[in-house]
Length: 381
Image (cartoon, rainbow, N blue to C red):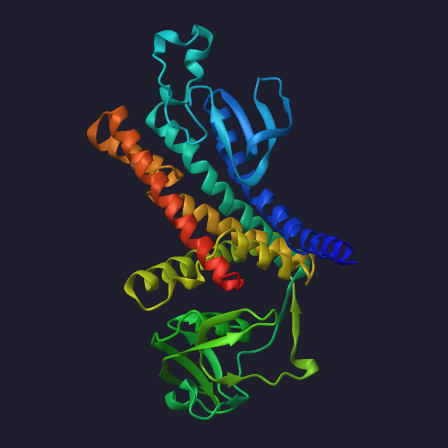
């Protein structure tokens, strides 16, 4: 009986967490690598391998230009390997130009101009941002938004709102100069502004007044039991059925809103990292694959649209992280290209190799730290 119970539990874990996680990660990784691939082809670079995952190949085929498209056993990333790369991290190969067949010399990535190489490298993160914008835009167009006015129906006693002078019936017009049209917009700005002073412009009985409030940092538990720290102002909206509005947008407006949504995720991520570095925020919110898998499973239980929305958020995060100036990441390559542009010549092979080793060590330490956080969060430790 225990054997059957274990099998059922394993099956439930597989379908509830692993499959949603792989679905989200595969979409994000595919578009990231597709960005590298498309721009590389445009620049005339020979692409040897396009891989989703690492390790031994599970399935693959060759296209007409000789690129091996493959799916590998370890589905935690992917890579595009050019014909002159030493490895999947695009470390330059050791072969001399004289060792390369003449018909391949004009297809070498490391023989292309500085601008072409930078474009190929930057294309991956940019593709992630474009994917996120398109997903958000599709949501705004085909799903729309359920919104209500940013009105304070209740002000909690001893809350940041009461201390700042909010009154029931106040309507928020703007926060720090940003126009506010919905209660959700206000909530989102407040939630990511814990312990930060915000300037509110309110409509109170037809008169505009200005207040300054500092959302208090509080730990709450979401619907899935996850503990989240965010800023709370202390106002509530008691919406009646007729006060909800459903609004969808034309494609151009949706793309603009999708761009704003993508920028918001970038801005929030950078602010959180800054707060971690300055000690205002704990690093325990940094998660790795285990946490992403857990969140993917939880979001999948809500519905496919929520899971696709998570893919957009994860796409932004992966694109942003890859732009960090760390060797082994796209941003590290761009850093080397920036130095090359200033010096007028590339760094020596030895210097680049040392840089890649340092970058690899940093990435591995970050992965270990994130996994440790995951194990603590999931109560395995």
